Length: 72
Image (cartoon, rainbow, N blue to C red):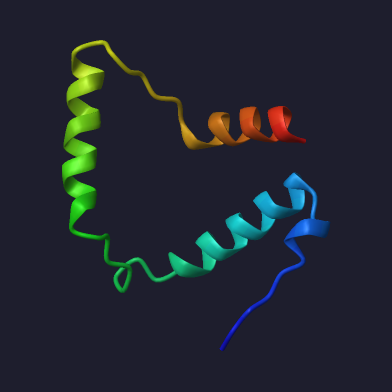
């Protein structure tokens, strides 16, 4: 099945909402959701950057609010 969205007509907020809905649907059954093999390597590298002080993280809700404010 091919899905076509009017991306050129959608606002950034609408696109973000669509992405959130897709992610919510993809991850609704966590037992069936399998991360790609490279994901563990990326997470370990990021964890090392956090430990060394090169990087810091925010919780997802805070990050989403900042994105909505910046793009909305």
